[in-house]
Image (cartoon, rainbow, N blue to C red):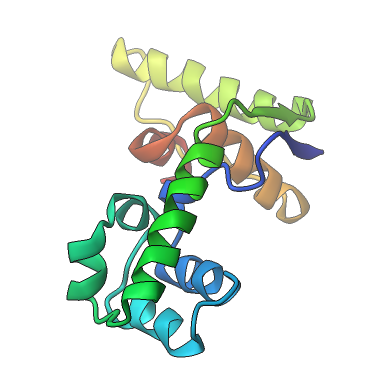
Amino acid sequence: KWTEQGCTNLRVKEWSPDEVSDWVANTAHIPDDVAALFIEHEVSGSELVALNEFGLKEIGVKRAGTICLLLDEISTLKKTASEDVVTLIEHSPYCFGKILDYLRLKRLHDENFIDGPPLPTVCDNQKNRFEKVVRYYFPGDNSKLILG
């Protein structure tokens, strides 16, 4: 069971252009066509929080009032995204067992005791959970070590 306690916008910097566009579309008093500009220019979450007045004009936001509203909302988003958030993870012996088995075999390989270990084989009904656990404990490119 995965829950996040605190801000619901925890991973703003990881938002895709679609998620950014959805956020813009759901922001009060922002014209609908403005959200399309964020998709058109493929603005990601990390780019969204870095946008300033110049950047908004560059992607095609023309109205001064809309620019001011967006800057205010982006500022609020940055504040809430930086608040402390705790992620609780249900302990999954199955997933942790697979990870530990792989890491043990990988270590034996590094010491030249065995050939390279195959990537962990996970039951279909556990794949999503396994990927979440791996991505949580091995963020970024580190997860590729285990997921391939």
